Every structure is written in C-alpha cells, then in structure tokens.
Image (cartoon, rainbow, N blue to C red; front, side):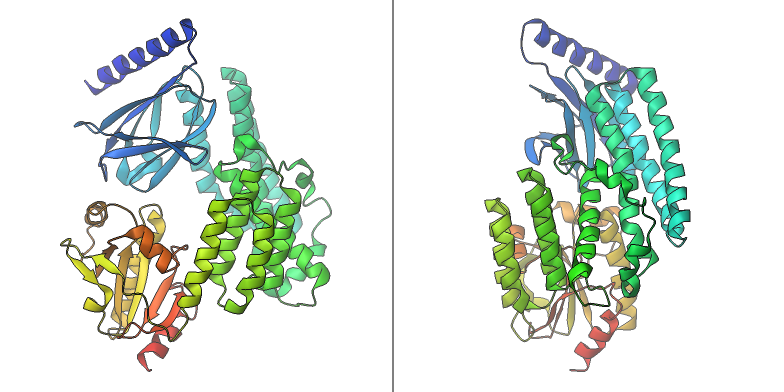
Length: 472
C-alpha cells in the first residue's frame, strides 16, 4: 500500500509540473517524503540560507511541498536537527523515505531526479567511510600520502565519469558532483601538515613536495553555485587556515604554531578579504573565522584590534552585529563576575532561574539537535565525569527553540532527565551567555560566580580545572 501511495503521488506531481510548463508558467518541482520516528511534526526547506517554507507532517508522518518556481541547484531540508542537501531541477518530483534514528544511512530517493540525489548521497556516505582511512595515511611521508590520496580520488572520478555518461546528467549536476570529489580530496591535503608535522614542527611546511598543492591553481574562491555546499565551504575553511599559517611564518619569529594568536588570525581574515570577492562567501568565511577565534581565545584584550580589522572587511550587517554583540557578552563573562541568572525550563516544564538549582560547584554544558554527535559524546563524557567528581553538578542545557522537542529527543536515547534543562528564551539566553560554540562549558561556584566561562570538557586540562574549582 505504501508503494502504491508513492507511485500515485509521483504521477500527480510530475503531471502537475508538466501542466505548468505547458501553460507557459515557470517550471516547478515537488519534494515529499515519509519520516519514520519523527522528532517533531515538521520539516524545513531552505535555499541559499533562506527558509522557503516550514511544511507540516500529516498523520502518516508524510509531507509534500511544491517549489514554484524552482531554481536549479542545491536545496536543504532539515528535521529534528538533522540536515541533508537535495539537488533539484525543473520538473523534478522527488520522494524520499527515512528513519530519523538513522538519518543519513536510511535516506533513499525515488521519482524523477532521484538518481542524481541517490548518487550524491552515496558520495556523502563514501566520504564518511574514507576519511578515517585517509587520516591514517596522514602519518605517512608527504610523497606516500599524496600518492594514496590521488589514487583514491581517481577511483571516485572513474565512478562519476561512468555515471554521467550513462545517465546524460545536466551540467549543473556535473559541476556539483565534480566539486564534491575535488574539494573533499583537496581538503585532505590542506589538513595534512597539521596531522603530520604537529604544532611544534609546522615550520617544516617548506619541505613538502613542490607539486603537493598544485591543485590550488584550480580553486574558484567565488563559486556561486557552491556557496552553501558543505564540501566546498569546508575546504575553504581548511585552506585559509593553512595559507594563513604560511603567511604568518613568513613574517613571524614564532617557533611554535599557536592558532589562538592574534597575528595569525589577523593574517587569516586579511587573506579571505584579498582572495574572495563574492560577498556571500566572503562574509560567511569571515564570520566563521571570527567566531572560531573569539570562542577559542581567552585574551580579551586582543578582541578590540581583531574587531576593528574584521569590521573593515565584512559587509554583512547581520554578522557584524553578531560579532560585536558576542564580544560585549564575553567581556561580561570574565572570571569573578556573576553569570546572568537565566530563566530555564526543567523536564516538568516548570520555570526556574539558575540560582534555584545551582547550589554546588557546577559545570554547565550545552547541546543542540543540530549536533547529534556532540549531543551523544558530551552526555557520555559528563556521565563519566560525574562518577569521578561527585562534588560537581553537571548540568546539560538544550539551546534549541521549542519547549517539548528537547524532552522527546532525550527520551529517544533513553537518557535520564535529571539535570537536563532548556532555555525559556533560547535566543536571548544564547546572546547573554555568548553561546556561539556548542563545545563551550561554563564552570561556576555555588553562588553563580564564574570560574571559567569558556572551557571544553574534552580539553586535556579540563579535569585540572575541575579540581581547581573544587579546591577553591
């Protein structure tokens, strides 16, 4: 019966789009599906970081949405913190079925346009499988590493060439699929020096083979079609980390690489500004670089010169306001100050202030639907630390919008709800607490006095910080 439903649905969608085209209307596309074990009652469809619509699930956990007109390219659908990109072209009628508990691995497309999306999904999963293998190769010499990576890339390339020849795919799809291969493997080479040399030896960059970065001649820093594509943007982040390091060592006397240093981070945003002209791509890269620097550095005195340089380069009012607001909030969260007494909800939907339940040395960590791995890892780590440090309360704080979904999400993984809370006003609380990194952990005394507002439970010295707080 389910298969019959999908066949009928696809036929209706395809006929509707053909009628639109026949009557001279702009071409449309349909996107629909069924979600098993949904975590909420809607999906969100976006393009170019703009929300097209929020579509409700019916009683059978299905939805159908008409995109009219459809711009050929990449779209995003998200549900319960999970995100996946879809390639759509005019007259496509794509239906998918997925299990929310196994989001990526269970996702299968049917209908017109399905073969392209199933192929991109296959590439995504293959990249996830091959990345740990390439990481192991990163311990090999530059020459051996380059040979291994180029050999794997050639296999991916042959597979894509066979697919595009068999199905006569569009130029837009070919461009995106090719970028997936190129930028994923380029990114591995950008990361290589950091894993092979280590921070103490990064000055040995000049010992890399002369042809190691030959692919850089093919980089398009301003590819409009790829501006929101994860492999492309990820590559650019790694790339600017790398070339900023090379520039930094060219004029610095530093013998050890410090990615938190002001000079290195100023070099990075200067390079972004000089090489990227597309405002959307440039502003996104600048914003990411600024957030990473500000959230990792505890040298508040360096924020002012960094902000001045950033504002000279960024043209996004939204991002500029975000960075300025973040710096103002962080300055208020210095050790010795009191943490803002934020209003939260407990698992019974009761409103409480932090001071109502923080009565001992406390570590507050944060989680979101959008970062499933961090959600699982942080809860596991907190569980381990609770046993080692019973003098400390470990409080988990959900930062997402919506008052009930967070409890449903915890119940899906059968986590105990004790010491789990949710911001009453997530947007305001995130701003007040400068929460622009999900990895942030805050250490507090029993009276909400800040011990450290910007630490990480996975850092090497985190347990030393806990002991220091306990012994105060």
